[in-house]
Image 1: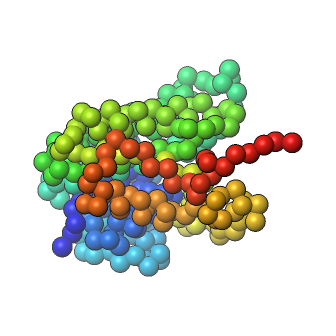
Image 2 (image 1 turned 30 degrees about the horizontal axis):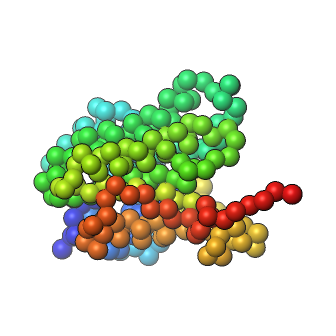
Length: 259
């Protein structure tokens, strides 16, 4: 028996793929939303290659542009009609480019595209899933980033979108409790090169220097985020809401002196 239906946005590649795989392995039904039709078409075969058993009816796929309200509204309505309800939402879809060039050269179109997908997309998904989530006493998890807390140069759109997502998280938690818990996960360096569609995938090798930047001695993997998602969805996390869980191997706690 399924543990419930979880909507995962940006589900067909990277962290979204890892979360989808992890939830399927743990007995959830996953509604995989993604804007990339080709990646969605190859999703189930790629899951099977990652030794993920996909039970009959456990994977539902839909092409959705989370920045477009009509697309979101239609997709959620079709999902509810097909599967009967939603127990959780993982807002993972996002434009992952962390560097966009000097801010004085940044176009308004570039800025709006990142904010529209990374932040407005989470709002639209939450807006249209809340009635179902409230009925299920469910949960929302927003995938933010440690770049909401620290930055490199030329990353203003991405950092702003992820910082906004953290504030959106605690605001939603106060608005939707006690029926719905809302939390964020801020991944650090998570290597997902091996979780992209086959044509894009590459092997993962890291230098000792790269590993040494993390207190745990390694770079993160998609499984690290998938496990955190599963925990936050579980009853063991029933007293956690409005929080940001940093999953970065300790990297943001390490002091670095140049020179």
